[in-house]
Length: 130
Image 1 (cartoon, helix red, strand yellow):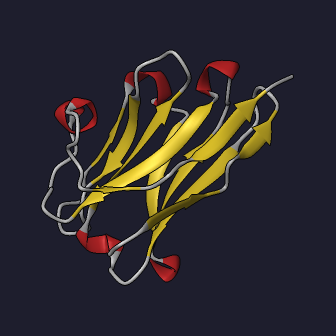
Image 2 (cartoon, one colour; image 1 turned 90 degrees about the horizontal axis):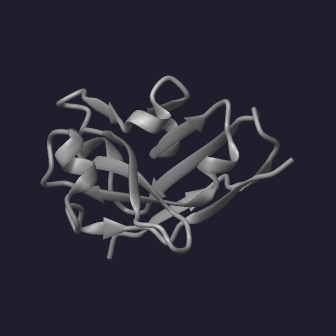
């Protein structure tokens, strides 16, 4: 079974940057739409960003992260990268990636529809503290 593994979490000061990676075993993520989500205790899960398969070439960002976060692919590592800049305490959460080979677009609907993706990672903790 295909597994998604997130890495790169940790702790950073406000205004700092962090780079998260979502990698997969046995398949090429280039053929998958991949999205990042985040969740904090007591809050609903929030869609952060999405990148469509390489054949489609789309990216989408939730409003709270536009201009600060960048999603991209690292083909050499078969990974999808979430570069997060100018982090604030409101960005602290468990970040997880999800993917689906049957999805070809990234839109608001992609990030807000429950169970839209069939592959899910376990998540990595991001802390933003002074």
